[in-house]
Image (cartoon, rainbow over the protein chains, first blue to last red):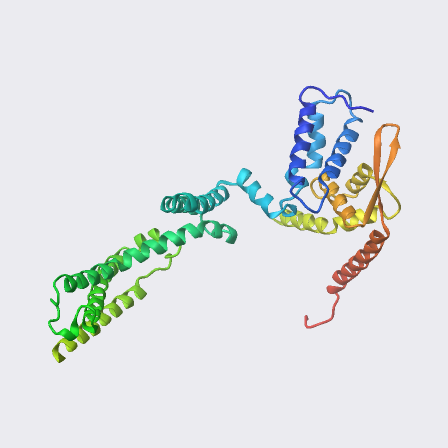
Length: 265
Length: 117
């Protein structure tokens, strides 16, 4: 017995089967065509017992018993790439943003270099804000790469630039003015004295800069935690204070060695 | 709260034994897919949606536990019947053993004499 559909009823069945088939194609454990045909037969078998032509409400009743496509083909049965695509297309915003940030970071870095990294970083920060805590482990691996790269670069430059700057300045002074720092031929521009002096200058730059940062960081813990979120959530500044003291100690040692070498010669 | 907990537990239990129920329903002979779903529906084995049965049947067929054949029908297109293969019968036997042991074990667990006073 053939089923007669009223307006809209057939479209509802066609749409349902198309959605199911779309999901079925992503599974490896079942035959998509076979299941779609079985479902069609089931639907028609139920509908042919109803008053013809069947209404959209009749169709909805049958489809409701069968369940929505996402229940018929469960996500855990789908292949990994299909799950990824599905989350991208239909998933909640936090997942979409996570995938988008990762995609922009990878492709943007290859295509646009620093701008791509920056774009990926901004999207990752947005994804992190939307996701909230705690985050699923998989999502972290989508969000963190851009954050780690940018934080590492920012922290590296932000922490060590005075060392390079002051060390470079000392080297430049010695190089530009001949033996300005040391007159003795033993301490020529390539000598041990120059190297020690440059290192002492770099250590001094770091010690001074880190002292300033430490003083600021201790007063504004939340600012540091916000800038380097989520990796600095437990930052207290104690370890940084120890590093600053170490920088001062290294500065003193290097400066003492440099002076000693100068006196000895 | 209690009702929700029980409903969730029942759903999980039904999901877990669905394959066994399908194979068991076919133990007495081939069944038309639609009739199989109706039988399971009557037994209240189906969890939420009847549509989940068809992917399961396809999976069991691909695993070699079921086979299908078409039979002409006076009411419409040819009907597909599912039946157990020899491998499916073996699997059903093994699942039954596991199931019986599980039921027996669970029932006896409350009567075990042990450290409890």
